[in-house]
Length: 118
Image 1 (cartoon, rainbow, N blue to C red):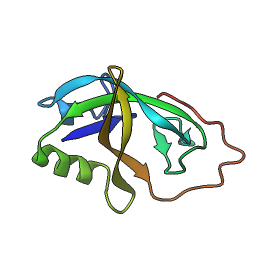
Image 2 (tube, rainbow, N blue to C red):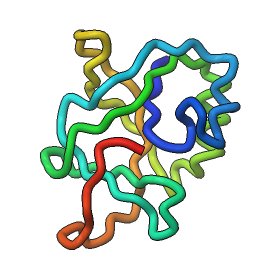
Image 3 (spheres, rainbow, N blue to C red):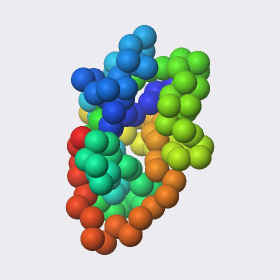
């Protein structure tokens, strides 16, 4: 199972240890634009399922086991705080699908600066 990570699960970020036994497939980019903003603290990003708004988001794709995916669901508090959905990614010049975590609560985005990478 492929998972696209864009925040604290990425290499050199504080939650990456949960992916230590997973295979890194490469850096990727969402095939569609999505709004991603920083938390008010600046410590982590939120990605929202509003396709066509925002920027192409940069992240990393990993091949994970079903057990690791369950652990990540707990870490991301899915399905309560975040939810997981498969979306298209561009990885190594190929279009693939991968799971991604979207934040459930969408704030007013018209006054927020969108980011493409965290």
